[in-house]
Image 1 (cartoon, one colour):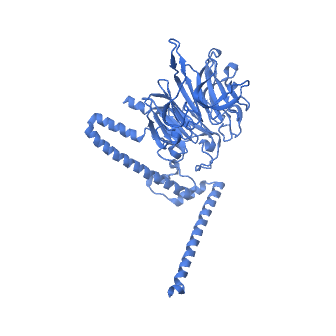
Image 2: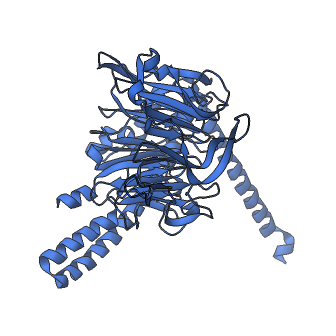
Image 3: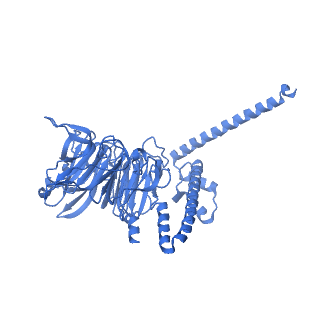
Amino acid sequence: MAANNLNRKAVALAAGEAHTLLLTAGDGDVYSWGRGTFGRLGNGSEVDHHFPLKIELGKKIVGLAAGAYHSLALSDDGSLWSWGYNSYGQLGFDGGSSSVPSLVKVPVTNGSATNNETTLKMSSVKAGGMMSLAIDEHGSLWMWGNCPVPEISSEVEFTLAPIPTPTPVNFHGHTVVKVACGSEHIVALVNAGAIRENGDLVCYTWGNNDHGQLGVGDTDTRPNPEIVQKFNTGAGSPWAAYEVACGAFHTCVLAYKKTDNVVLENACWTFGRGNNGQLGQGTSKNSLYPQMVDGLPKNLNLVSVDCGLFHTSVVSSSGSVWSWGMENGLGLCPEATFTEGDGGDALSPRLINGPKFSDPVQVACGAAHTVILADNGYKLWSWGRGKSGVLGTGQEVDFFKPTPVLWPPPNEDGQETVTKSVLEKGSEESTEIEKRLAVMMEEMNLLQSKFYIMERYASILHGSIFGKPFEEDKDIPLSLRTSGTFDINKEWENMLESCDRSKLIRLQMFYRNMLAGVDDKMMNLRIKEMLKEYLESSPRNNR
């Protein structure tokens, strides 16, 4: 039973442009859901999947990562596996896209004892955009895909180049602890060894810097890693970085301030492109230097951070989730239909209202969706764009507040029940239980489908009558919950009383247009009736 529970416990998440990966604790299984284009789900097809589906890897996985359209997994034996889009060699080999996991061609080294060539083992993996990164067992960083690399010439210049084979990044013998990457830049937290006696990590950045995403005070590109002085405790800065994440063109760093090895506070710092508020600094301007996100409450213990293309989310140890950036911090692109409030970009952090996320583990951001793993890894919630099943709810509906992901998957619950029955009651009885279970699953799916249709119908009616989206937790009147009756006239009056002038004007325009449409329809029907009466009474028809 303990093993089964561990197989239902997730330990890590990764989100791509429109897909999500999940890693379990027990057998190290990987699940995926969302958009299937380019084979990014790793299930052998390009079909979308609306809830978590297990990937057949045949390995115990201990780490995973997601780029825009590709995925990576790290096995407990140090081998790397990749699948999805491969136009820039981000899968670690030449060739086209792959819809099933394929082994990444990692470098080989000379063994120190036997001088035989041995395959280098990796210890962590990361991805972003069209790029892939891994840290090996010795703390060296490797990168491949569409990477920032220096040209071999008399003058070192910056360029982006497709590299299909893992290539090392030189940190002069110091070990890399954590790494993140955006569309065209990389951020690494490096243990400087003897240079840093207190063990603080040094933050390095390099790559494209058009928007100041390297945090070094200008917009010049860097072909090689350069220290971000704001987090350089060796140069007198009080702030030391401990976590990092990258959006397409912005960077977010979690850092702590301490005195005499006692942590006094931690904070979130951002820099780079800010046109959609993804920096959370109350403005849409870019920032060339790291700036603290002042809109967060003081004394938060921030445990996880991630960036979508143009939005950012952080989680505190108490389970509070804060987001900012494009479309209210949801990351929804401008062409998306926004139906919650007035929409608009969140220039400062906004608290995500929803259930209590006790024992939070991790937050992951895709291009237009966010997923949080909490309850010590046993529960997941998602919100944002639901197209292609990205949210893992079994639907393609956008959700603007956290909604439970179908975890564990319904079919696996059924399989577990049947397996238990086989062991306890014998194969004959289990067959009958399996049949009944299949019928129950069909009925449950049918009820779920009907409930979804009813939910949509109720939401459309509510929006048409009251001029605002239906929110289940606060829009169901108390009288309807307790007695089953609903006074629509009274609720309409209450709604009008709560409206300000701008909302009343929008309602007036909405119903004016609706009334005009009704009048036009009535006029058309009256004209048809008159024509019909005329034709029927015409002398020609009476002959």
